[in-house]
Length: 315
Image (cartoon, one colour):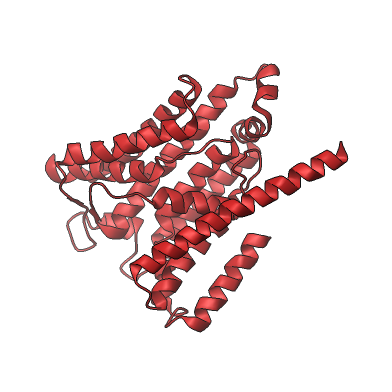
C-alpha cells in the first residue's frame, strides 16, 4: 500500500534527521497526538465514502469539550455526566449536519461549514470566552486522566481506546448494512434510490457517526491537554480529512478503508512530531502540513482519473 510505504519512509527520514525522534518520549507524543485526530478521521471516513464532507468536526469536538467543561467546573455536575453530555452534543451536531444535507438539500460543504461556525460561536457564548479545565491526574477526579490519557506508569491509554474504536468501526463499515449502504451511496446514489433504498437515511447515519466520533475525540482532547480554549479547533478537521485522503479514501466517494485512514493519521502525527524534532518553528509545521494536504488531494484526483480510465477501457 502506498500510504504504508510513505509512513515507513517518513519515519526513517525523521529518525535520521531529527533529534531524539526514536526516543520513548517522542513515541509517546506521536501516539498522544494521534488520539483525537484518529477519532475524527475514523468518523469522517464514513462521510467521505458517501461522497460528502464534514468540515465541522474540529469545531464540534472543541465545542463539545467546552460544554462538558462548563458543566463540570461551573455547574458542578459529576464528571461522568459531563462525559456523556460531550458525546451527546457531538452526536447531535452530526445529526444536524445529516439533516441539513439530506432533508434541506444543502451541499455538504455549506452545511458543515455553517455548523462549524455555529459551534465555534456557541462554545464562546456558553463559556463566556473563558477556558475550561479538566482534572489532572493529581486532582480528586484524577481517574479521568488515568482512564483516558495515561496511567501513572505512563501507558498511553488513548492508543488502546483508539484501537478498540477502530476495530468496532471496521466491523460496522465492512460487516453491517450501514457500511454496505455507505459504500453504495458513494458509488451511485441514484441507483440506490431507484432500488427502493432510503439513501438519505444512510447518508444521514454517516454524519451522525462522524459527530459521535467528534464527541469521543473531545474527551481524549480534554484528557490530553486538560485545558480547552474557545475559538480553537480550526485545522483539526483538515488534519483528519488529509489523513483520510492520504489513506486512500476518495473524495469522489465509494472508495476507502479505515485501515488506510489509521495509516494516514500516523503519517500526520509523525510529520508533526518529526518537524518538532528538527527544531522547526510552528510556521514551518503549518506550511508542511498544508503541502501534505494539497499533495493528498492531488493524489486522490490522480487515482480517480486512473480509475475512470480503467472503467472506460472495460466498457
